[in-house]
Length: 422
Ligand SMILES: *Cc1c(COP(=O)(O)O)cnc(C)c1O
Image (cartoon, rainbow, N blue to C red):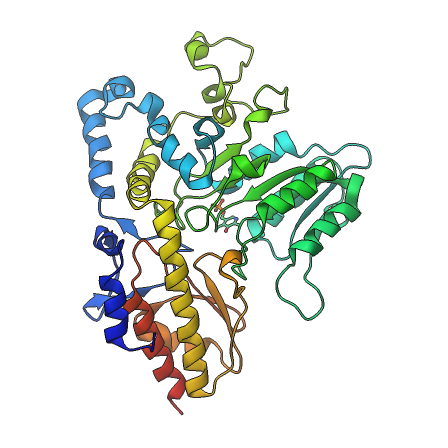
């Protein structure tokens, strides 16, 4: 494509997912929708969310406590209504996933069960620059067990002069750590570079070393193809407000591989994890549900789950196959647009996200050499909503559910205009 508006519109006309854009609310700038490239930070609001919330408000008004069983979507089993859709997104069996809590909370709950340092085996290996919350969670878990995070939390750094991690290096690092390694905890997609990791290879290497392997899928769920069950991960967690469009602070999710269901694991338990048949007997001894639901603590927060439910319905209609096909095209188009503008304006715009579509989702992270915050502010002034990281990195995610080729084209011409100004 040559970067003209006509070309972009032709592409949109041929996009089988084009109708989904209309099902989201777009913030406006000067009377037209912004170019919204921050679906990796907070996904847009699906138009169906209002009605989904109204339904629960009405049922609460109408039924009071009886709504637990009499509501249109009974609150007692509310999360079960969208469990299958969630499982399809992360490539799991329905009984292996559960929507609950927030992401960092889930990370802690899962580490209680799956980070069990003993003897020499104490270390956690993660990627360089994990999201800060993950670092705090891992370090505090290590300290909780009486060990020193500075010694036992190991960040995997790229080779000298490189930004990305090579799978072969991750695998050999895991083997080197060997019987000192208790847990490998990687992102599915790194929030900063946009690199998607090889979950199958990392899991196999971790297991070969005798370690547990878990993943934080905050930037992967709804973005890249996932096959948690088949790839044999032990556990995973994610949030729903990024690519899953389920609202600010929305409900998190967790995966536990079914092979762990019968195990006698340490756990911070709550009544909603207890065997459903006997939950209201209120017995003293905890009897875990034989699914990922065993990790639930509390009854369903219905007002956080209603948007999640509405948002997941859209994913099921669109289907991950079609979303990923479009994601590759759209991200490829953004990539060529950035390269073209860099050349046309003589600018040094370094895309640090992998060029290989198999190693990324829809996010591109770009180092703006020789530029700073001023360029980013100029983009914002033209109605482009992207994400800025000091000192000079811009992250953009053209989301296949609601972004268009025209969005990317508009971004390209705004960028070119901003870079051409003396
Ligand atoms: C967004 C994000 C978080 C945020 O954590 P919350 O508990 O949802 O506030 C944590 N980790 C990663 C990797 C993220 O991308």
